[in-house]
Length: 112
Length: 113
View 1: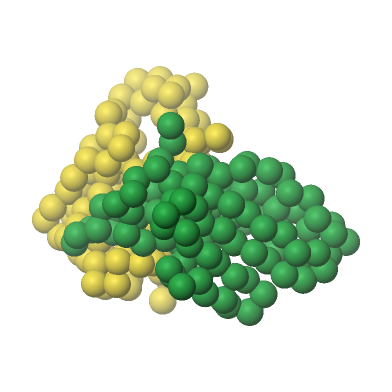
View 2: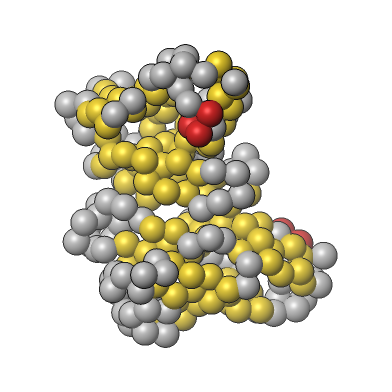
């Protein structure tokens, strides 16, 4: 079983739609959680961290459920520019080194 | 600031050839990383360097070596390239104190024939 699992998609949605991505992780000792965004043929970039209480950044809302080992990302009012692959990322190691485990990503295509 | 830079951007090798991928960061970060990204596999850690002078194996180190030349530079070497090493290679760096964001370079697309 992969340490971090995501639905690969693609999710094809019209502009203005609300879309949600889910992710599960296997290591209950995982300490920190993130969503990264990767545009086609580009490098990954941090979209947002995910906190236990849930957090929001504009149109983006991230939720964490430690009991179910489940992370979600909600995008409201989708824009064409949101089209990208969204990577669920977990830090299971902590300590002095930031070692991240990446999911395979969920592809979002926002249609005009 | 250029952030994280990688050279070359593209490379084609024949089986058995060697090459070194270069990475440099100008953010004064302590930690640096090498990943490979393959379709359906996600990003996998090859080697990392928690600080200048130290290197450690990641998830998929076989067939690779690394050198942390100084605080800025972290190179990845393929001694005898194999077709299974065809991939996109990303270098990243992070501030060890924050533990959060890793900053990635633009990647090197490597094909081994």
